[in-house]
Image 1 (cartoon, rainbow, N blue to C red):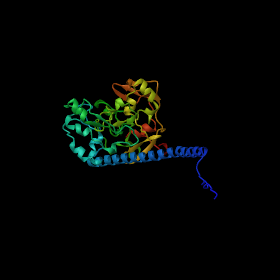
Image 2 (image 1 turned 90 degrees about the vertical axis):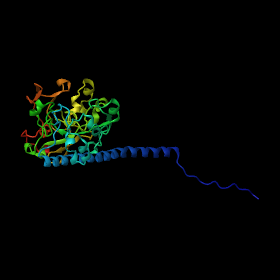
Image 3 (image 1 turned 180 degrees about the horizontal axis):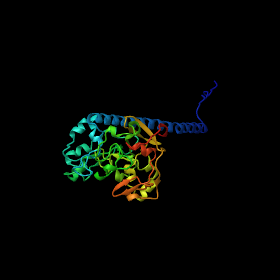
Length: 342
């Protein structure tokens, strides 16, 4: 009897070269798809940001219907020049934060211990989802009193990436209120009848790139409940997204005012703004703006627009020529703005 070895079965498989080709194809597909996925995610975040500003704009309009004026900033000036509340506190009851509004003791300013817990409430409507740092929380500052250090450490402070339109420049003290040209100015309120440039051509609320500030500054600024000039307001003194373009100079020269008051966002190419008619627009960072004198260092806060003057603690237009961006921030400048310019 002849013994025969069993027939060897055929085996199919990848050679090393074929395996490398497959891995290369998968890598190429991932490289092609990843930007598309990131773009889709950013589009969703931008849509959420637009929705946030839409809700805030509607809240402001409902506040105006109930009170006859837009919500103001830092109105409790009888306490001190920087102890008042933000416009978001004033209109909290109009964007589903009634419990927060009722918890505030308006007989005291925001730094009193009685109002400390409100500081840690984080209305998500005030957070742009594209900002990487805006939903951080920090221990309460020593300004809050009477509280012990342990209480301040235990309680938290929440920030915001949105602000009210303060106009061409922020007004710090009551003596500067007469120079204010925005719609939510320090220590004053604005009626819709005063917006003679047209509600559809005037900014009401807008984005501020909170996350561009250094980590050491983030815990001290942009508190959602604060009416202090650098917390919940923006101005158009600097072009849109200027802080991103001047990062190196900010780090080198300490231009504290640029990221603190300038408008901007982490959305590619521009930022969202709510207009005084309740609509929301995305303004491109290439929008026409006045010329900045980058060789200047006005008051240690950064460069100043060409021709702008700081006289007797009050900004003065001088020979400065406003651009389209600046014209949108003034409520009664008499500018005619074409929709094609936005």
